[in-house]
Image (cartoon, rainbow, N blue to C red; front, side, top):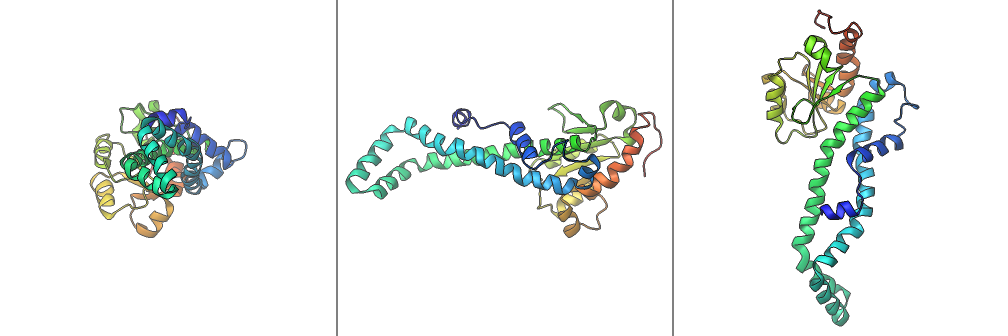
Length: 265
């Protein structure tokens, strides 16, 4: 399947996400930074959904011809037998024979497509958030791959000088796996402004109790998830609340430089 994706020229996440930003009109010439901050949840939701539409268009052109071509090259005997059956007993009989013989290969191919989507989904979500931060003119530092922390706002220098006025952001597409490792490492940073971003719509009470209660981390979710499931949980934030309230407080201190000593309340 790697060869199919390569030969089909399936673009990387950076290209897919950038194209989606442009298709939605989310470009610096067309949007006001304050407007982006105020509509962060709505715009992120649109990007989350529409990036998949962009990807599916490329997948269709890549896989629809690439997978059959790959199978024909790898399993010529199966196709020859299916052709003979189709010639003697009709197309349906030939197709059934082919499908039965190659079913495990079809299954593996589409499992590979599904796994590729999951892998890309995490990277896509990171790029969507970073792109909106750029449009909102919110400064950030992207961490190296080995760190659980994805972003430091506004920059690493400010964070090292005064953690009270910086924000630490880790991004997880879902909370279904390995989130506990991330939470543990974020907790060990001992920073007062730690935020775990997720696109997961199935945030459970256990997630909230562990992430927010045990680790004292802000869990940032879709506005709808916040309002419908956890309206009274102070450490569960909607994306709009994060940009317009929590981040707005911290931004006041960024213009004063890293020596600001008061802790935001």
